Image (cartoon, rainbow, N blue to C red; front, side, top):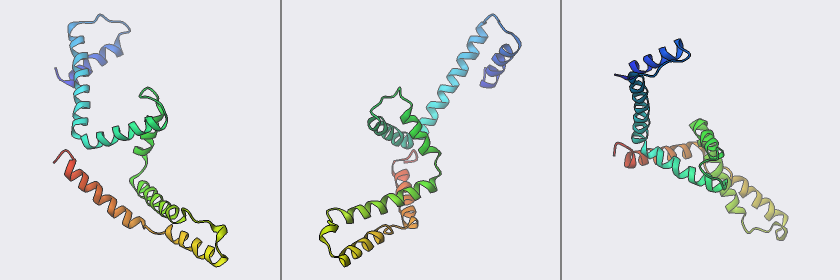
Length: 158
């Protein structure tokens, strides 16, 4: 029996009969479908181990962040948001993150109240410039290099 035959057999029974006696061939068809689905899932995970590692690691962080467990759907919804967001948006967000981080780094420990007006103005200008420290182009280029190198080194083809 192949997958197509198994599906056809059970589909016909479910469509054409409200109740039916279950025969050995029906059980065989059902077990074949389950086996095929499980094999497909196992194969997908096996072929994408690097992605699986990152997903599980981030899933652990989300569970910790939301103080929940694997039975809560909040971390799953967060993973879905990340997966559904276009890669370009991830590059945009990463660029903003790096620039904001640079602005915060420059601002730490500064007490504007102890500065002259000109010093405050100069410091605010340096903060504004820090917000443009990283261009999307260079962040994207470096990120793609890191992704490519990680996949080359640790991906399924290694």
